[in-house]
Length: 439
Ligand code: GDP
Ligand code: MG
Image (cartoon, rainbow, N blue to C red; front, side):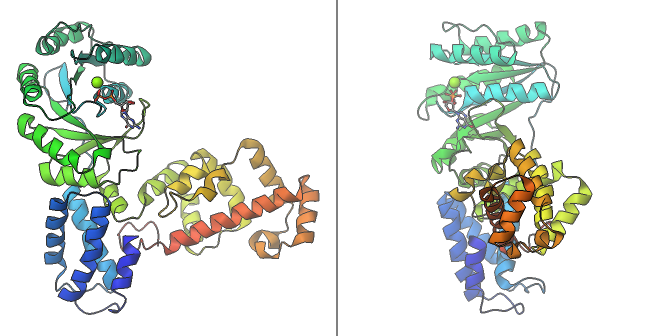
């Protein structure tokens, strides 16, 4: 990860003194590489590096940090500042019903995202109304009508021979009649940026005065997404951006570049084709993912939401000391099941994303019963010192728990893998980010 690369660069300077021009520059070369690897636009990377350099030069290295960590800390703070500090929701201000206009190139995910936003709004107690305004592709209208049917949201009965401006205008009255309060305008896209399309979008905007105009941009297009959002923003003055297809291997560079160049917030990300796969965008997490730290914060948040506070504190202490016994393993199996699969959870840990060996770590109900039985058949000493469990002990434990020796072996193997993962997490170079959650 970037953090460990920087550690290397700054190893020479130990815990005191000022950051000099030479070592800052060496460190920033690594940062620049990480940014470009994450597909950050070169213009953005260049400006960013200059800003960090200006801030870092001559700074005292904090007592609790190494110089490498200090630079990572500055980089992280600058990234967060650039991305915006807070979550930004849809703008729904104005007289009811309000309109939210979705724009973007063909295939970027506008229609799907309209459906996702309808689901999102319904959950918040709103009454969304879907408006197909892409009259150029007949299938586009049907696609939205079908989505509306699936999620029980009314759809304006657009026809291909209608004018898109007229559709959006008439839809407002229809939505009002249907008792709806938020119109989602699914507009047409083109394969490339196009003056005619822009002109049409401007006409729609001027006719309906939407409370929010959102560009749906495909995160997989990387650097192109920057030019696209720049053009749409110039023509329409966007309220924000939704980055779709973040479930692919896009690394967040597009998010950073778009935000830096347009100054407009990323409001949501699409993380799959299903209509529930829309997530709020957490600017601070992008910083971590660009720095190569994985979604550590997401992981912790997810863990916390299902574990009660005390247990979480207890577990954190044990994780810190890597004193995680088989007894804890048993407790955690139950907790982990509540969080989704263990595989998912491990995928969020830095450096673990591509680690195939964790694929078959998922546990089912019968497996849990077996795990409990096996661990119950161990002596207290064995539970806290798994190394002593040799062949004959394994046989005894298997007999005692009504399982096979292979079951005991598998359990111990899974346990040691989890231990390894915890050790890695404890070493993971995530110190100095002021979260106070992990060492
Ligand atoms: P539009 O032309 O802008 O309306 O794009 P569509 O909504 O029709 O989406 C184009 C394709 O992208 C469809 O196959 C969608 O299922 C897919 N898609 C949209 N959003 C996402 C996403 O967040 N993740 C993934 N994996 N696919 C998406
Ligand atoms: Mg569409």
